[in-house]
Image (tube, rainbow, N blue to C red; front, side, top):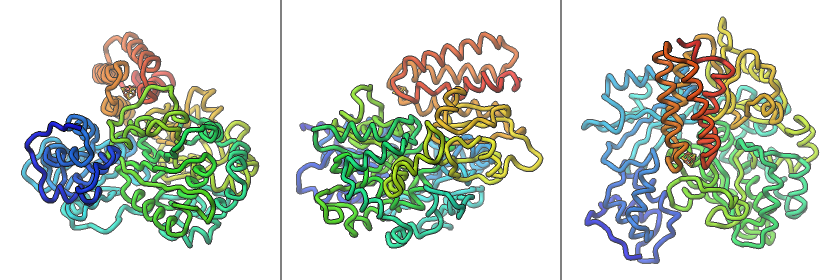
Length: 598
Ligand code: SF4
């Protein structure tokens, strides 16, 4: 391509960061799909991406500079103006707000000045962030140190003093972040969590000692059709939120005559209140690898990607280690376990964009484009990643596969309800005594789940539960007997969504939470289609006016909010716009929060 580049040149350090990833510049241009990894490499090394670094990246990848700028400016974790070497992200989403993150932000502002993009001459900078997926350990922060050995670490249960220590580099360790909260640790009957916290997640040997690897051996005996038959018998529905039958997706790709085919694991869980993928990837990464290899075998995929959200550095590291170990043991790579089946799995990191959890936006992100959703059809099973047939499954879905293949689909389906088989992971956070990840059979009443987590703090009552995350629905105290199954929640006008369960007690400021939800969708809309781009702004405006001036015409404002919601639901391209009003609408319907707040 005849590239029109400005005169800005890269520095030696920027060049080194890119060459480390791409190898010597002597060879042919690398593929555009390495654009985001290049940007992340420079961001990690320097702390921001200069025009010179962008030019050099464009030369190496043969990408037009305007295109590369469009991609770089899409992601929250890529900076295009000079930044100090340390960046702190402080979560301001619902679970962290309930645990006081807003007062940490106010204190930081008092001591350090306003958040990014404003900054002074110091060696660090901070900014408010959308959910960091540490809701069980709220309030949470993430601190990124750039340099020759970049280091990003989660800071659970952050306080001003721990945050200041981490910013100043006084409390750095290779992978800090605290252990995940698995309150059911050791409980009999767990499937997905049975190894979590019990074995060394970095050891394939430890995984094998707990039955790991048996499912892959059985899958190779069963053959692709036999594996799909077991998955069909299990009645497994996708755990990412859409609840589509996994076997139907796999069959569609397996039937295709087109090659290559891809397997993509969506580990970009950015739904506020959700952290189950993080726990699975950090504590049992080989289960994901084994599930992915079996899925690839059943569907004839030659190559796979796991797209891990940028806010999960430890999960990505552990998964990369697990892939390397599985490769060395012959579970990945050419001729897996000596059979005529080869498959490679690569970990790709996101860079801070909620919308990349949408499957087609995720494909665009891997391919080196802005993470904007595509119109469907075509669906991924016919034209997904790189335009080829693609199986895309969520982490929890793939983590179910080894058990289904090892024990048989019928055994998996024996737990749960008729239309919702198996167990399900739920992420409990907010005003609850034992926040953390819980695994229960599908159909378990919400009340039982809350009781298992100890209920609300002593002396408090549950005022509301947000089920399914920001794109989910509010439930009131009268809804607590709702069975947690796909069919029961659908009938109740709710959704299990991502498995997020955020609990609000009678002290919680629901008005503040509602406004934050509206701001979240306004910030995260990719802006590609008008109903969502404008609707999310209007929704926030109306809500803000209503809550701040409660004496206005409530009926007219409620009607306006409903009309905005309807337009977004009917005319948005993707699920973000279609669900951006769901929580607000459910609050209006079920909890009458807006009037209460006046
Ligand atoms: S609905 Fe929103 S997030 Fe989805 S494509 Fe349209 S603007 Fe982008």
